[in-house]
Amino acid sequence: MPRIIKSALIQATCPFDGSSDPHSIRTAMIDKHMALIEEAAAKGVQILCMQELFYGPYFPAEQEMRWYGLTEEVPNGPTIQLMMETARRLGMVLIVPIYEVDGTGIYYNTAAVIDADGRFLGKYRKTHLPHCHPGFWEKFYFRPSNLGYPVFETAVGKVGVYLCYDRHFPEGARCLGLNGAEIVFNPSATVAGLSEHLWKIEQPAHAVANQYFIAAINRVGFEKPWNIGEFYGQSYFCDPRGQMVAVASRDKDELLIADLDLDMIQEVRNVWQFYRDRRPETYDPITSP
Image (cartoon, rainbow, N blue to C red):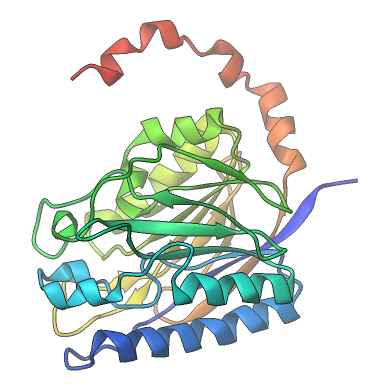
């Protein structure tokens, strides 16, 4: 029997006009996403992922301490506790990207992974942090990950997470494959320009090189007052052959659903023996300072 899982991604606009306080934004975004999660459950979705920092705007567009107010503990904060209850009630695996606090002034860009029975399985913390051009001041807000590249054994398969800017680094994508990932979710917040050209090149390349499914999520719209560019949506699923399975719209809130046949992974690996033919003893320069 084919091992097919019904998977979903949520891309969404953020109703932030520059005057709203962080807590009211969080409430509005959680309410929006809860409605879409319920819709997904009604359509039989088994696993669902949201966009990077899903319950707020992409606040690293500026450097302001007020956004520290969006931090929560993982898993003991209110948002992850809500999502654990929701996962258990709906029987759905959830990947939930939020702003994590792990002690005074110790903050991470984090995605929690929750199993279909509501258990917190663990978290991925963003490894590579952009801080290189106006509008992406992430090193002001986050520490880089200290957790490596975990893969989570969920009710529907082995799940890895990569976060936004991470996607530009093939080394971590390979580590996720070596750790057994069958689906890698990449929640993102990325704007038009060179990024859009690369959006459908880099991650399908990871899917092919590592022979797993990629699920790429991007938010949509312009976020005031910063207007650093258009978040261009186009969330998608890509199979281990590099083929797009489903692609979302560019400019609207959307629940994107696709059936993924995880048996394809072994079929592809039987033909292209990349893991067998690797030469790790020759790769030392990659990890040299």
